Image 1 (cartoon, helix red, strand yellow):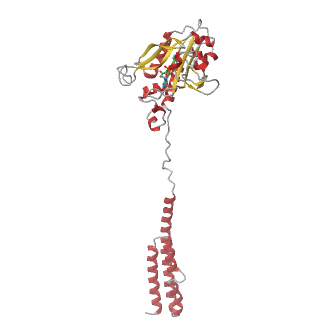
Image 2 (cartoon, rainbow, N blue to C red; image 1 turned 90 degrees about the horizontal axis):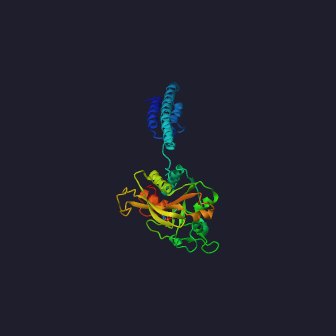
Image 3 (spheres, helix red, strand yellow; image 1 turned 30 degrees about the vertical axis):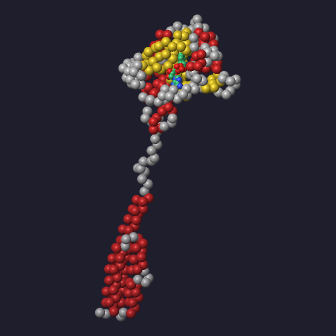
Length: 349
Ligand code: FA5
């Protein structure tokens, strides 16, 4: 074999070997390394090209052709492989860096109104539907509004029915947390002339020991209607209308004589038990009735305290516990469950 033939064979072998190395490169880095090896300055192909000088002049063209053929083959294989590797690298980084906007964000748990707030608002709606307005009064009250104007003179035994929480302000035992919402009756009649139709939902406070149905802080809704010719029949009809609006017409209202210093006559009202519909169950102590609150015709002494003429006007008032109502509606066996801040409990309603 002549020196020229030998160089041609070597060039063809290098071309095959290089083409294999390029197509086997797994990454662009591997490909760059193979490029250096087969097409770089110190590559075998360069050595062959250098060696052309040593062959006979007549044979140089053959060797030169073989070298450039090998180079062309290598460059074609290199660029084909580079194209493939670049495309897959671009695809990989696109996959890695892709922002998947279809993934959901963090879930925000939406709360809901406390059941007492919900029933409070429902009660307002029922009475507004009956033509009443909503009134408000302060939670810290004077002896005058909480007791005296409501016909509880100092030392009256009826004061003992409402264990009072006094506030250290002014003379001893003259400022207190209101024990009921009834002071709003007086505040409304001071400001407004009859006809008056108001309801006043709000917080009340008593030095009551916590038990299943008593809490030192609770909610009441007061009602007051003053007009010409108001009778006890209107009171009974109004209470029945509210019970029917809230609970349905198959539930009945019951009225029993009672005593409150600011109403005469006075009564307590109850409704047939929502759980047994009057049949008798543990919730209503097998009586079929649950007590809701007190009511009565406005006492002439209260009218006198606010300057309304009892010969011209008459009126009725009622007041009942909202927490108790919620307990009944939702079957809450202990009042503290409504207020001890356990979201797991409240979120059931
Ligand atoms: C009164 O508070 C009168 N002001 C009601 C009234 C208004 C009578 C207008 C006449 C005219 P009494 O103390 O009975 O009445 O309370 C009424 C209701 O408030 C009770 O039936 C009960 O539902 C609720 N209540 C009273 N004390 C508590 C307490 N500690 N915890 C939860 N609810 C209570």
